[in-house]
Image (cartoon, rainbow, N blue to C red; front, side, top):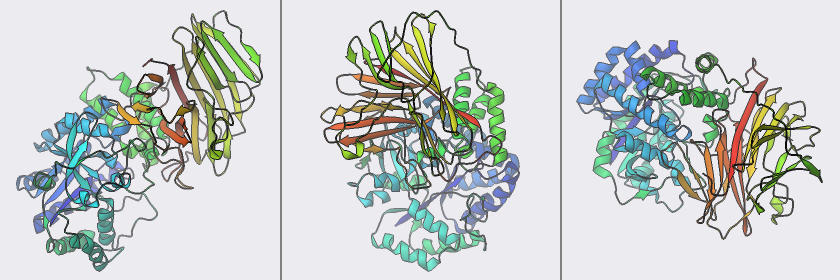
Length: 638
């Protein structure tokens, strides 16, 4: 029986201030080297390039010892990238740059090029296989448990043999990590359970005669140190490195510790070619349910805002941009600024980004002499010109009713009450509606009568229809539809001014497809951090990203849409494309696809805030503006 360990080292750790870094290295990083030298136990260590630079700055003597242990084949560098960031949520170009700069940093400081990469935050899409393959890695390390949970046909024994992971265009060997196993190890070292408890649990693995067991594959900074993220953190009562040493001595009696690369090369099964995700779960994350995708895209201090700033900074960079500028962008896109980061660190990174971008200057739209008159009928506002006919709901917050191009009805708009026959979906489902929901406010929507609309011509073939909506005393919404009669497109822009902090979800401009028949081969395309789009079938597929997991977590998952596009299609054509202006806002995109007898209810939610354990109240900025802008391109437009 063979064992392996991968410690995850990260000095950008959300709750660690810069002043604490030397202490963390002394209490966590040096003792790991001491442990390996004392026991000659083989261990993998994942380091980001950023972390390595911090070690070189504060404790350069650590570098020499680590290099020697790697030379002795007692330790192994596991790659990460320059910065730990959420790959499925950032553009392809940023992902590739992160890996390239990371590999350059390893070579410059250590003279080592790692062959295995540890997936950042264990957040995976099929595109990540292509990214690491293109960067030159020979394998990845990724969590088993959540992938297994969505593949009931997999055998549990797959977890203890390296396999092959499928990407969009590439395949790559995968070394499994295991959340249950590493948490059992953590609990024992933290004295939350006894050694006897641990080995009673571990007996099941011994009895099953598994080949390769990932004993530990998580944080390094939690042993003999407490980052202070959670109230539930274990008390520090003993020397936990002494306790780790005792544990490893006992484990060495039951199996042989090998380097991760040795485990991989010796035991990989090329027969097990596995797709870790599926259409309902195109992105999977680590550990228990609280680690949903919204954690890094719609929670924290104001993750929507920092992600939007990062997209704008990214758009400023080009081939002439310096290494320092790219490192700065990668640092700002780091996952740790999006969860339990300290107020001081948050303010510093926001000020850095704002100073580079000067926030977002708004351009005032010109107003030309209007050559179209709107008509009003039965609560509807009608626009008609050049073969384009569009109706909006005047009594429902200017939501989109329907759109015709040269007499052909487009497959999006409003599903009216009774069109879906399942009792659970007998309601109106709109396009362009916004909803705020929390335990304090209940559900507040913008589906109210609008008292005044502005209609303007702003270019030769372009018109705007806008209104202002008061959503109780909680928020004021400015909503604007831009109609392009030449290209037959609709653009929705929303600016929502919050008047108070909302401990809940805020979703703007929801898009609704008209019901598609279940007999059609419906699918969606989007980019989840890679060069190529991922294709996911909607046939007989239930997707409920928008539904809450608990009272304390308002969503379950989402998609990356990292190039800003979501395409719905079938075998005959792409019938609608949504293009998000990510420089205006970088929302969490969530899908719903519900089977309603012989039809689908398919919707896209754009969240600028979700509720989870990382959501923070900013006392200095209770009033803030949250935005969304996306364009609807009907028919075969891409």
